[in-house]
Image (cartoon, rainbow over all chains, first blue to last red; front, side, top):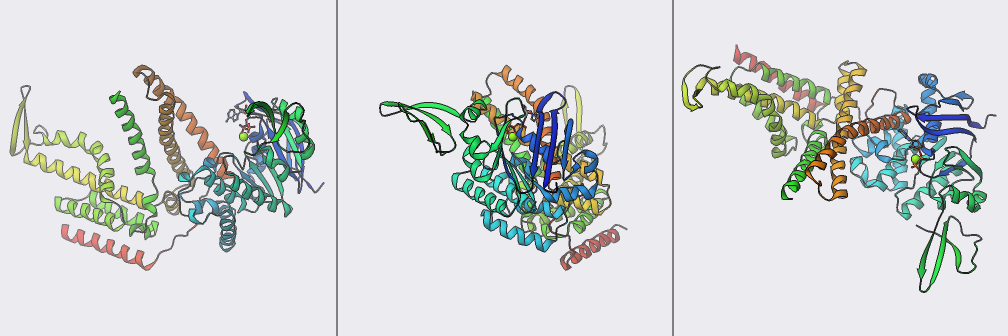
Length: 282
Length: 276
Ligand SMILES: Nc1ncnc2c1ncn2[C@@H]1O[C@H](COP(=O)(O)OP(=O)(O)OP(=O)(O)O)[C@@H](O)[C@H]1O
Ligand SMILES: [Mg+2]
C-alpha cells in the first residue's frame, strides 16, 4: 500500500464544463514504475498529466496521492503543497509556457529557490545539469529567444533541478534533433535507474520501449483503451492502428511498390509479396 | 500593393519596436552604472529626482536635471538614440494637448513674437506662451525620462520585489506583474498573428477581408493571451510558486550605493539652498 503513489478512480474532467477531456480514467501508479502514455492528438494525455500534477482538478471521481486526495482544499495547505511540489516534477508540453524568467539561469533555479532549497545546494545541482545537458553558453540568454530544442532542454533542466521522486513529462522529445533526443532519453534512463517514477506522454513510439515498462493507450473516447507491457502493446498492430499511432503509406523503389507500415520495433514483420514492415527512424 | 506592404511592414515593425522597447530586459542586463546599483536605493533616488523635477521653478533647473538623466543613461551603457526615441515617443502624447494651446495668446497673454491670421482668427504667439510651453515640455520630458531610465535599467522581477520591500501589498504587486505579462503576450501574439496571416495569404489580401481579419484578431488574441497566461501561472505553481516571488541574487547595499545616495541627497540640499 505504501508503494501506491497515484490512484485514480473513475475520473472525469472537462474544460469549462463543455469540452470533455477525460471520460472515466482508472489507473494505479506505483513507486518506481516507468509509464508511457500514448494516444492520438486530443485524446487527453496532457489533461491527464495535469491532473496528476494537481494543476487541474477532477470534476468527478477521485485522485489520490499517497492516500491523500488531490483537491483544491488540500493544495491550500501550504505544507502539503510544498511537499507535493518537491516530490512531483512536471515538464510542460509547450516550453514557452514553462519559461517565464528574464534569464535561463533564473528559470532553471526558480523551482528549488521557491521550494526553499539551500543556495549552495542549488548551485551544485545547476552545475551538474548544465554540464549534462550542455547548457553552458545559454545561462545568461533570454529564454524566449532560444530555439525550440534549446527551450525544451532548459525546461527539462528546470524540472530536474528540483530532484523530484516522480517525474512527469509531456512530450519531452518533440521537436528535438536525433542526438539531443538520445541525450534526453539517456538522461531519463539514468534518472529511472535511480528508482524514480517516470510518467511520459509521447507520440514517439521509438522511445517508448526504452523509457517505460508499462504503456497506457489513450483512445479517442478520451479514456484508457488498453494497457500492458511495452513489448506487447507495441506489437499489437490493430490496437495501434485503431488509435492513430501507426500509418501505412506506399512509395516506389525502382520498380516495385513497397507498402510500409510505420511501426516502432523491428521484430517480426510480414514480408510476403513486397509487403514489409520497416522501422522508421525519423 | 506597395501600400499594403508598407502598412504591413510598419505594423510589424511598430509591434517589434513596442516589444523591444517596453519589454526588453537586455538594457537591464548590461554591465552599466545604474544596473549595478541596489534596486531599492535606485528607486528612492529616482523618486527624489522626479519630485525635484515636478517642483522645479526655472528652465535652468529643468535643463540640469534633464542633462543629468541623459548623462546617467550614457554611463549605464544605454544607446542615446534608443533612449531619446523611446522617451520622446511618449512625451508628445502627454504634452501636446496641454502645451500647444498654451503657446497661443488667448491662454497666455503677453509680448507678441509673431502672429498669423488663419480663417479670420488671429493667432498670436507670445514670448510668455513659448516659455511656459517649453517649461512644460521639459518638465514632462525630464520626469518621463527618469521613469523610463529606472524601468529599463532594472529588471522586471527586481522592480516587483522592490515594491514588496516597500510594503506594497502582495496582491497589488502580483496583479501588476500579471498585467505586465498579459500585455507582453498580447503584443507578442499580435505580431506573430500578423506574420502568420502574411505567410498564409501572402499579403493582407483585400482591404475588406483585411479588416475582417483585424476584427477577428483582437477578440481572439485577447482570449489566447488570457489562456497562455493561465498556463504560465500553472507552470509557476508546478515549480513551487506560492505567491511570493524570490530573486536568485539577493539585494545588497554596497559602498557604491552609499556614495550614490549621499551624492543625491547633497544635490537635493544644494538645490533647496539655491532656491531659497
Ligand atoms: N484549455 C482548453 N479549453 C478547452 N478545451 C481544451 C483545452 N485544453 C484541451 N482541451 C480539449 O481537451 C481534449 C484533450 O486535450 P489534451 O490537451 O489533454 O490532449 P492531448 O492528448 O494532450 O493532445 P496532444 O497530443 O495534441 O497534445 C481535447 O479534445 C481538447 O480539445
Ligand atoms: Mg498534449
